Image 1 (cartoon, rainbow, N blue to C red):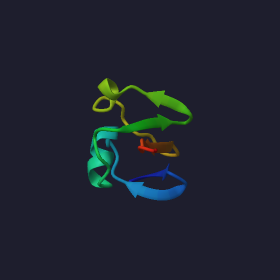
Image 2 (cartoon, one colour):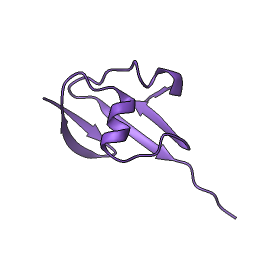
Image 3 (cartoon, rainbow, N blue to C red):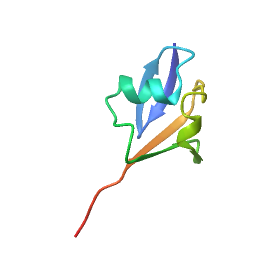
Image 4 (cartoon, one colour):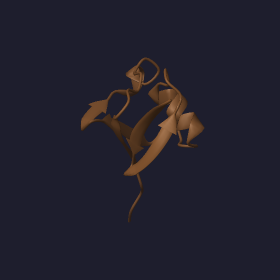
Length: 67
C-alpha cells in the first residue's frame, strides 16, 4: 500500500496503480478533467502509463460549463 494526497485528502491505494486505474477506483469521469501530479500536468495519453508513487500529491480538476 502507498499513501497519496488526492484533492487534499489522504488516500491509501495499492502499489502499481496508474492514473487511469485511480480515476476508475474513485469514480471520476475519463473526459472533461485534467490531472496533475506534484504540480505537473499529466497528458491524458500518459494516464495508463503513469504509476503513482508513495507521497504523490494528485490534483484532479473537472471542467464546468458556465453562462
